[in-house]
Length: 409
Ligand SMILES: Nc1ncnc2c1ncn2[C@@H]1O[C@H](COP(=O)(O)OP(=O)(O)OP(=O)(O)O)[C@@H](O)[C@H]1O
Ligand SMILES: [Mn+2]
Image 1 (tube, protein in one colour):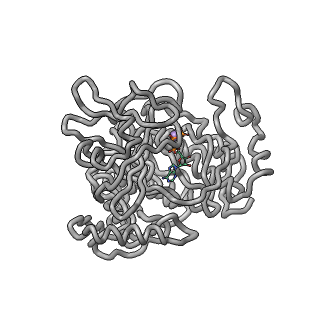
Image 2 (cartoon, protein in one colour):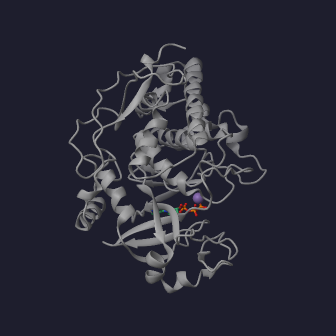
Image 3 (tube, helix red, strand yellow):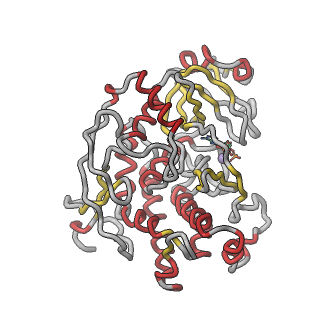
């Protein structure tokens, strides 16, 4: 392997996830994070991707997060800004540290009301934070090192997968995802005093006398509770609730959830059919989502929600189940269609050589979060190489001018 001088390292830029009091930083040209040459010695890393489409933008300094500068009053401003944000480019404000402020507000605003959130199959709570912001709270069900065996869509949702997915989306410059952060809530301080009667009816005491929740959802069972730790704390993913009207579609590449094979699993020309039904924009969007899902191994995107003609990445809890498994068919939209948005390629190119891991670790650490085990980080890097290899395969088969698209076929 060649010297480390060519390896890339992401440097966090433009205060994107920093928020509140950071030094103003230069805007970034392509993605919110930029790659710069790594000069320090380090362990060998995978080679950079096979293609290069763009020179890397200049690096800027990393701004420290200063939570002390954010007051409760500032939270109200954050919610207002979030609520009134209107853009065709992103779901939420994305510059000047706005995402960092939103995460901080989600993580620290006082809980004013807690109820069950019965939509969907998994136990989750609806929190109303001070300032009336709604939050979905998906509680921790497993330790980070727990391995899910069996079906790709098996097990309970992984709370860390939701948050990891948010950071991954930020790094990839996918701006249609609700902000999500690990939050700790105290059963007696934050939940019981403000719990609805309905929620209280789905609480039981366990053998050690702790108050646990079994909730209200399709798969919720009284013997599958979520209990606080010995300090009375329940950890979970706190996800900004989007009070928007989504259009919901079935994914053409959805699984059958049985032994029956779906059309995409048997028809090599399946993509042609999809091209006849969906717009180029939607198909390219689905391919971006497939890459994203492949990296975290979310094989459960049976349907997808659309807002302003963009797929919104809701429900990312089925990722990070087994670090030893790379279910390649999650990438079927990419290898069956062999097209990719040029800007997605540019973003993928910038996160090569270990930069993805470093960035997500750094961003998580800013908020005191460890989002995955090293095995999972290694797995995501390994899958990234498989994404590069798939794109290389497509270019070999069709030529790069057919593969890279700017929205048209
Ligand atoms: N952040 C959000 N804001 C608003 N609505 C949301 C949000 N996340 C999810 N939803 C809505 O709630 C529904 C259920 O959420 P989610 O899919 O996360 O739950 P689930 O229990 O995992 O469901 P399923 O088992 O069907 O995947 C979604 O289909 C979506 O319509
Ligand atoms: Mn789900």
